[in-house]
Image (tube, rainbow, N blue to C red):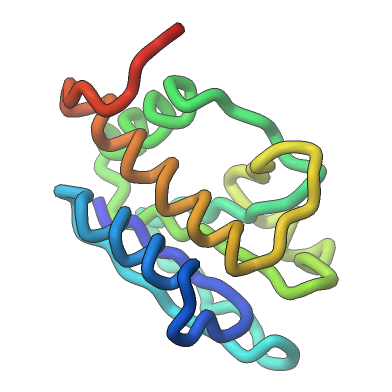
Length: 140
């Protein structure tokens, strides 16, 4: 299953970009990052066998194991792509939020989009590590 981050704004050559690349590079699953302008333009249309996950402060907070289990279920159901949408400063519009398969929150705090990308990339690596039995994740 392709793990695809679609984000508003450019991350450029920054420490956050290095973190995103480092974590995504460690994932055994296929990954992709697409950048969209900060404003204007629509998010890409969603094809069949794709799950859309919109990062949103009003979304569901999942622990790392719960997140891994959700990705595992989608993978096992034959989902071809999990598309993670990171909005601009004003977030996503209501229509996009309503059409998402999952609204996901990284916590109650608001994060800059560059940090949100790095945090999401780390959680994607952690989730795939959990699913593969890799010792990266340790439960307290």
